[in-house]
Amino acid sequence: MRKLHWVAKGCAAALISAALLFTSSIASAASIHTAQNKDTFWKLSKQYSVPLDELMQANAKINPLNIYPGLKITIPDKSKPMVKAKAKAKAVSTAGVKTVAVNGKSVDYKKVIQAKASAYTAAAEENGGWAGLDYFGNALKVGTVAVDPETIPLGTKLYIAGYDYDGLPKGGMLATATDVGGSIKGNRVDIFVPDNRKKAMTFGFQYVKVYVLD
Image (cartoon, rainbow, N blue to C red):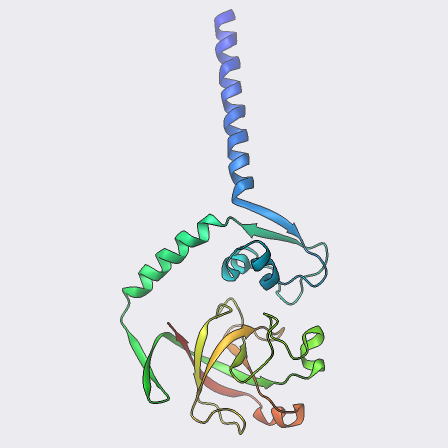
């Protein structure tokens, strides 16, 4: 009986050690950041050296425009995104090459999205505390586009065609997804125009083709 007691005790100790090891591995895989005033996913991606898209995927239920002090944000493990990125790149490289003519040159693209587009300006009333700046803190310019990060990851290079607006490049333009908007969900894009709000309103809503470039 005494021998069985020590065997049982040893098994219990082993189980506890395994549980602690498992808990430790979870803790090392991700950490929690308590949001401070003016935190953004972009700022936190730089602070923790984590790719922006990985950070946003880990916090898919959080509105990037509603990060408030005290909000708990999951910071993913730095080592895992690199593996995912390599796997993704390998998968893309095996796909058939598609091209679109941009300024007389053929440019590769991954897919094309039929999107509903609107236009916005640098006016403070349209950008809140980010007047004149995109989500990354860069100055708004022709080629800045606000997207839904769950549909088009921030930082993605784009070619947009099919719009009709005096003030944007004729025929189509190269752009980058560097901004977000509260009403920009799904297949919606908001295109920055360097005009006043009255003129920008004449853009209305237009259906465009958004080419996601390689």
